[in-house]
Amino acid sequence: MDLLDATADPDVLTQRADELLGAQRIGAARALLAAAQRLAPDGRPMASLAARIEMRAGNPSASIAALGQAIAVGPRAELFMLRADARRQLGDIAGAATDAAEAVIHDRNDPAAKALLGVLMLELGRYDDAVACLREAVGNVPGDPSFREGLANAQLASGDPVAAAATYEAGIIAAPGSLSLRNAAILLAVRERDFARAVALADAACTVGIADACTFGLKGHALSSLGQHDEAAEAYGDALKLGPEDPYVQHMVAAASMRPGTPGAPEDYVRSVFDGYADRFEAHLIGLGYRMPGVMRNAIRAHLSIAAVTNGDATGDNGATLGPVLDLGCGTGLVAVALADLPLGPFVGVDLSPRMLEHAAAKGLYAELHAGDVVTFLAGDTRQWRLMLAADVLVYIGALEGLLNAAYARLRPGALFIGSAEELIGPHVGNGDWALGRQGRYAHAVGYIERVSRAAGFVVRAIDPEVQRYDAGAPVRGFLIVLERPHGDS
Image 1 (cartoon, one colour):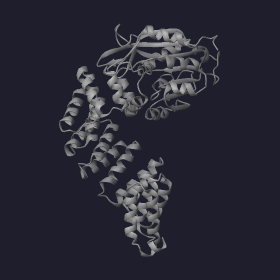
Image 2 (tube, helix red, strand yellow):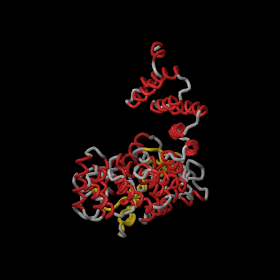
Image 3 (tube, helix red, strand yellow):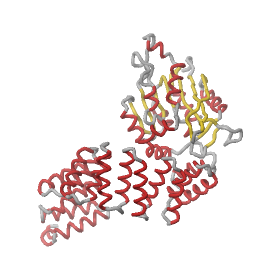
Image 4 (spheres, one colour):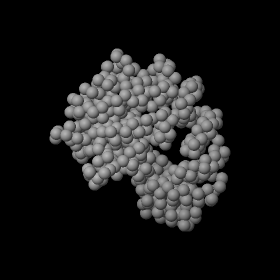
């Protein structure tokens, strides 16, 4: 290495180290860069490369330190952007935004700096600033799909889906080969329930040969929502050919009755659906007339001794409350909000979607939140619960035996399980006990629910007919289920 130091050109060494980093040879890149730095300690390109090496090696703190030294010597937009990325990885969004703003100040013509600042403004909840920054970036480089998607995300967050749809449409014209833009536009149309538009966008993508499993899967979902189930099954079949291992595709193919008998929605499917749905989950459910949080509240007041607790005649774990309470599939915490003024607690929530749990945590109503499958959680957590809630959980499980057996084992004697289910309509649907519907949700027969509940050891207090929500203006019929683990059981 001494001979190399004496004869090599530091610029050549730096360039070669950069190439090695691109080839994922991090150790070799670091060694060559060290040699270059000994030859030219003040080389500015080396500071940028050193920071990128540390980032690739998973050391954002070391990257920040290296960038701080380089910025002190010669501040440049590129260095501020790199440090913003490192700070973002460490969760310092405010610090990252400050660095991104410095990058824009040092190079006002850099669209990437404006886009980065816009994305960080979005993460900080400053939606108008995010839209302004990303709009400038798009204006500078109209054909960049990532800038378009960032702008559309900011417009959606600011409550303007019409503008977001227009941004996607203009982006497809400017960058017709972008699959991500086309799929994002289709997904937005599905979420806004403009299913005809979603099908048209998917067909346009297929016409120009820009389509993947996601494109066909979304098309199938839209067609199913339009009642065109044969066409939906065909689209899901095409999706399955392109993405045979994709959990969303597998589940929706099953929902199209091409693979009947699937006992439960795959975890990856549920997680991906609700992670993408989290930011608009509550507004969407309210728009569908979702009733279960209020229905559960009424059931709790009817079946638990709430009045006795309120009057100080009974106590739970926290003196004046009945608890603890386990909220299975808690989502964004809608049920906890509906129960917040009742003497219940502490609340513990479990959900597969980390994004949904972020929204639940922001409400400040849960003592604990856990990301994971509800049955797996029940199997691994040995606590005993006074009340267990499962709103809109059974619709993602076909065979209920596993869940109910696990729930029974974790309830105290005298404790309640309160959940909701959609009604299986028609004597020959599925296996007669449960069936997977076209929209990827399971429906259950009331006789099956009674039978498996009793087999698990529960006393059935109530299985009351309840409208769950409204779909396309029609009521979705189902049940409110109240089960009790008997007092004398141990």
